[in-house]
Structure formats: structure tokens, C-alpha cells
Image (cartoon, rainbow, N blue to C red; front, side, top):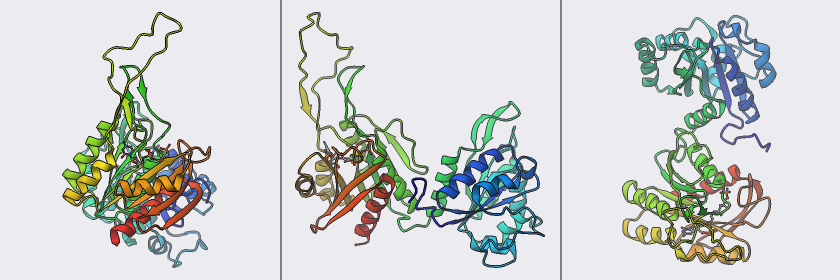
Length: 418
Ligand code: PMT
């Protein structure tokens, strides 16, 4: 699978409606990235959109003819019927209108059907995702807001525009989000009724930071990528996701509730408080948690000795074992129903992982050799062995952390079903 492929979009048919906003230039990148993700993208352009960008541009990035005229639609595009507006709607897994102008929103709210985009939306029954983009105060205008309420009341998925500078030089809310955000929202809309709909996942990611003084801290090499990938995989399947992360530089998968923490004790509080407060169905501890912290964190920056040969000794105190705490809590409150942990080892991988699985009361452990250069910490790829309580071992050869995330979530889904 090419590195840009996204399982949730691979093989999906997306109708991308493009309307007359300067933000059309972003829609070209969106069409390109959706195509690279493995989706079949059929673009419908309104007349106004063609004032900004030509159909050829979209055809170049999607590899498919572009629809611009309901009276002369291109044939031979693999639609289920030769009537284009019906065929486009019938075949689509989702219709995404990005950018969506105020006029288009009004027309959809009224159920108009006098151009190819509106008639396709009227005939389709698949999810409708709208990403409004407009200048000045148009987005805040009561008419636009009323039209959005009507569309949302019919189940449309709204991607709120961002606040920033408009082409006019004014600033306000109405800017089309960037492609990663748009794709994240589309994945959320596609997964809304997925197999994990109604399930709550609590996921940790990243490296703890244990303060030595206000300037320095003790940490490890975890980037948080594996944990964030697991969160994305759960979102793709419709789960509610709370992501407790130490990965300050990683984006939040669209739709996840993000909780930022730094130390092991903060992570412990965040995990245990959410288990008692919201009874998550599953906990996945992908975070790299320090077992020790500096016994005392100095209030001021520690100064080095004047003696150039003098070293420094740092006393370390033991951190709580979060999964052990969760084990006791689980016996008390019966939640999470499924607990997944990881084992980061440099030797004796299986033996150490099996011991942790048993000792920490997990249902599944994901063992990875973190001494390998192409797996474990920071890499985009990983190589893992899954061990479950029945002693079954599943070896996953080197693949993307996104794929590992999907495999782990699929196993959790099966455990939840069981
Ligand atoms: O973040 P990336 O750069 O993508 O790298 C991914 C990863 C290598 C960090 C990830 O795949 C991984 O292995 N995460 C677990 C790292 C770790 O702390 O493993 P461990 O063997 O030290 O701990 C075993 C399990 O107990 C882990 O689930 C850990 O979250 C948990 N733990 C550890 C210590 C502690 N005090 N409390 C815990 O609950």
C-alpha cells in the first residue's frame, strides 16, 4: 500500500462538489490527496467555481473527467446509471462540498435542483459533508446560519470554517480549513455509524517528561505516532476517543478529545479520573511511561559546580505503574472492559511481554523491539507481535504505524464483541 493510502478512504467513491470561492485552490489539493489516499474522486464544479480554476486542473489530479454540466455529463466513468446526477449520487460513499459558498448552502437548504451539484445532492442518500468558505460577515449572517441549521437537521456534517484573514483583507470566520483537517472530518463522517459507534476509547501516547528543574527534564524517545495512529483508527470506526498525549508536536486526530499531560503522575491522574468518570470501553496504553522521576524537582535552574571535574548525582524516585493501578481499579468498577498495553523491549521481547501481560492484567499486549532502527520509537513504521491472554501470538511484519493502529483496534473490537 503506498504510503499516502488511507484504509478508511481506499476504494471509497467521493463526489467532491466545488463552488465559487477563492478557496477553490485548496480543493485542488484536497482532490489530489483524496485520490492518493485511494479514493475515486468525481468532481462536480459549479459555473462560479470555473471562474477560479479550470476543470482540467481537477482532471489532472483525479485522473477522472470533471462534471460541469447537467445536460452534457461525461460518459464512461463507471457510474451505475447513465443519468449522471442519479449515478453520481447512487455510487457515492459521501458527497463533500468544499468550499461551499453561501449560495450553495441556500440552494441545498431549499432543495433546489437546477444545476448538477444541487440535483445530485437531492438524489443522493449518502452522507453530505459541507465545508463553508466565504468572505466578510457572510458566514455569521442569520440567513447562512439558518441554512446550515436546516442542512444539519437533515444529517449533513458541517466542517466549521476557520477564523483568519480573508482575500478581502478583512478577518473573521469563514476560511476553509487545510486539507488534513478536511480529510479528518471526512473520515469522521464516513465512520460515524461504524462498528465502534457508541464505544469510548481512552488512549495514551507519547513520552513522559519528568522535571529535574524548570529548564530540564528526563524523557524518552517516544514521538507519540503509534498512539495517535491508534486513536485515528478508532475514530475511523466510529468510536468516541479521548487521547491523553504527551506528544506536544503531533496534531490531534480530528474528532478526538485531546488531553495534554507531561509526567507519569499527570498521566495516571488523567487515565484513572476518566475511567471513574466516563467508564471507557477500552484503554490502550501506547504511551512510553517513565518508571522513575527525579526525586525532587528544583525550583530554580540547577547551577553546575565551579569544580570542572565535579560530577552530579541525581536521586530517582519510583513512578506509579499506571496499568497496575488500572488493574486494581478495573476489579473495583469493572471498566475498562478491554485493556491493551505495549511492551518496549531491547531483548527477551516475548518473555518480557508475556510477563507484563499477566502481571498488569492486560487483555492484549503489543510487543515491539525498540532497538530496531525501522521500528519502535519515532519511526513511521513498526514491527510488532500481539500476545493475548489465550497465549496466541500474532506477528505483524514491518508496516506503517497507521496499519498497526488498525490491527490493534480491530483486535480490541473483537475482544469487545467477545
Ligand atoms: O511513540 P512512538 O515514537 O510512535 O513509539 C511507539 C512506542 C515504541 C512508544 C510504543 O510502540 C510503545 O512500545 N509504547 C510503550 C512503551 C512503554 O512504556 O513500554 P514498557 O514496556 O516500558 O511498559 C509496558 C506497558 O506499561 C506500556 O503499555 C506502558 O504504557 C505501561 N506503563 C509503563 C510504565 C508505567 N510506570 N506505567 C505504565 O502503565
